[in-house]
Length: 234
Image (cartoon, rainbow, N blue to C red; front, top):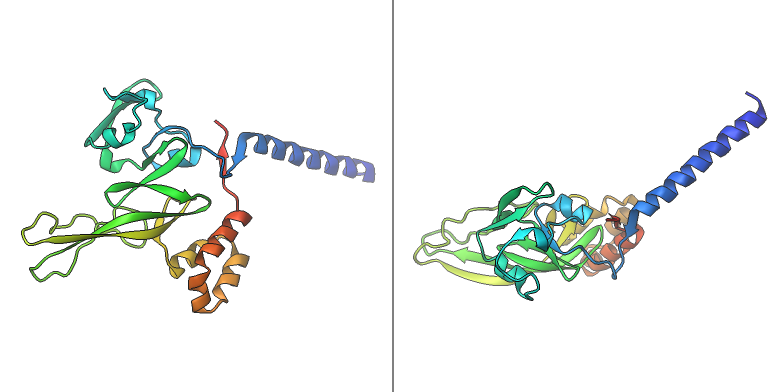
């Protein structure tokens, strides 16, 4: 192959790459604080990633769609009925819903409640209530963790047992937006999620333990700035 032909081939490849990149960017939108999620129920995390919830208009209910307490009221039901994209009526147990979007803001189902995700990025941060149950019959406590993470304690035998007491506290969590996995907000969890950015992870790992505790949130912010979140344009 002549030099001229080789140069032409290289230019064609480069042009194709540029065009592909332009088409790619045309189909995706970068997350910013102004980004708004489409209104509706997210049955699974994949719908969150694609910003394709079940729209309000497809939910079967007697509650007015413009009711400011629409989601609070509908989520009181054990089941929710809706029409899928093919127009077929389906039902879903409320306890199995991932979450919902209200006024463009994302809420996640966790610990038997729905909580706003306040910091959004490839690593999310939010606060949720956690209720612990204790019994006077020899078992110190029992947890309910219906989320993805290092722990998965489901049914609690002491929940309605005579002599059982409960206490509720606020807990901080982080979420991996690539998988939907929710973890406790601590040094170990932050370090695990930072592994997706080896350079930043090594920087964090080389800090003293005290500094790691102090700078957890800063490194989450750094990670999100270096690894921006994108959503498909709908």
